[in-house]
Length: 520
Image 1 (cartoon, one colour):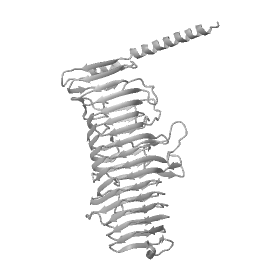
Image 2: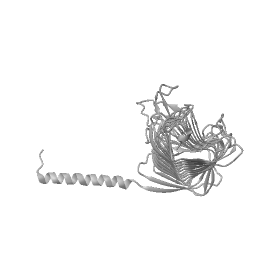
Image 3: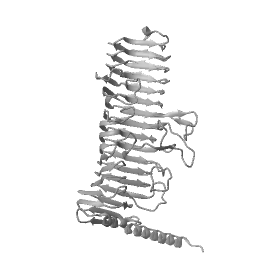
Image 4: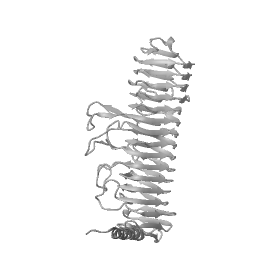
């Protein structure tokens, strides 16, 4: 049937009106509900609270604001929270009754993939008390647009306070994570764990599709008296957590790591305060033991070397807590495998594109305050490292420790740093800046090294190292030590007050000759 112009215009108008009515109907059907949960103080609130949370299940578009009346209540099971729910808990404490019980998780069926299980959820205020029992307090998977504001999670035995996996657009703001119970071991039990979606690590949330976390911000939070603070210690090769920002937080009395980032890209660990921690920040693409590293179940693995990430403006005091690994304030680790190693295929897992800048570090036990291994095209600039080796370190061998060290690194700049050794009983062998293990094409310039117990600047078994405009004073043995067939180009350096020699060239080439007098 043909329509003339007038009838055609009429038909189009009717269709547009019907579409507008449909859209208005959909919009009008979305409502906001405000609910208040009341119960006898000290009672089990699990069922009455879950009844209110269930109102959001399957109700697409509706928003539920649920407020719990102030008081302390018991939780005797696992609560499930659904999309478009805002939970308000000012003045509320929820205390776990049974060990092994996760107190809060996302609701929904078990077939979600990606970030599609639940969205638009906030938890505001309140305290979640694990009562010193085992089991995570919270586990969120396959979710998006989730916020925790001024929430306290505390009193957990040998478990995480909260784990998230396959989540995006998550914010932790002004939260407190405190009081890990049980034996403090050297393994990683982060209070806030950003995990991988593998069944070995994150059950209860199939599909186990290896979806990474994206856009996770941790800011203004306090981590206190814990095994480890925040981060990730496992990885699916080729699957990278993106835009993880751990900024402006406080870490106090952490037995192990304050922050650990594994397989992070486009991320920031900036402007945090870390006091009395057994280890500061580790950023890595593999683990040195290759544990908790997995090849993807499907698809071709594509390693990323340019991580484009920052460790900037942190203030750190590192102490001996009993953590039994070589201790550092900042450690970067990557590696190229020329052949398959265990279950890990050959590939380039080195790290590049890192900025380590403007950090203030006080290390009070033996170790390497800043160490880069398998790192390229990165910068270590304008940091202040104070070595006060009053406490013994672990796994040191004959190494007395150092302030800044590069192992198997290339095309990096170490510049404008200040290294100071405070005379202490265990600081006799401490060295300042060290370039080791076949490193090449690195530039060390404009640094100041004072009172190194052993040597100020050390270059061993490394090629084409540029040494410009450094000032080295008061070293216990050598101001600059170039050895083991290294090649060095030096100019404008000032070295004085060394205990034995200001410059010692032993089997190395400096400015084209094996002669310390040519050192510039």
